[in-house]
Length: 227
Image 1 (tube, helix red, strand yellow):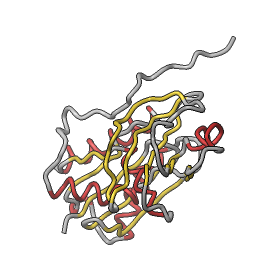
Image 2 (tube, rainbow, N blue to C red):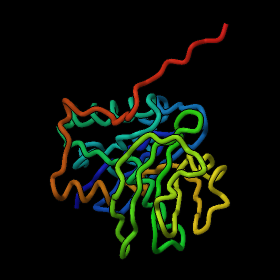
Image 3 (cartoon, rainbow, N blue to C red):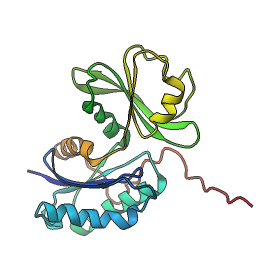
């Protein structure tokens, strides 16, 4: 059985887990605002290893949430993952953050329609993609994009729609009166990464550790200080 270390740092949730095949055997998370991931991440890695009576030498791979998301959070998570892979000569797996969030539909009684993961960006902008849920499988029908939200957003999708993610508040503000529309405010977590990462490991869908970079989607913008 493959033992995979999972790292999720794209939002305020600093999430670390160990998975054997696609089952989580230990997890540590902290959703406290402030993005102190740099201080927490390695402590959380030690914690999940200790809880499961494993060491770094037992690992078969490291998986990281690749974005989009917080620029700082992505840098911290990817740097840690690459560092471990270099030091331990392990394969690196990447998991699309929006795909991972989309799998949180399973916490609800939602069996048919569109699952639309939403990550908060600036102002009324979000990072999003669109999946169609068919026979329990998520089929990607619209790739990742940055989108400005208004009352006409996603109206081309006919049928049940479930919005999931930490940017759902923006969607709910303008689409709450639409029919067949549901909302699930949530943060990305390593809980949803396990099955995706383990599948990638089995089919050897691995990244080049030397050249892998986070998927920022947009360039980092430095905020100017007010005079």
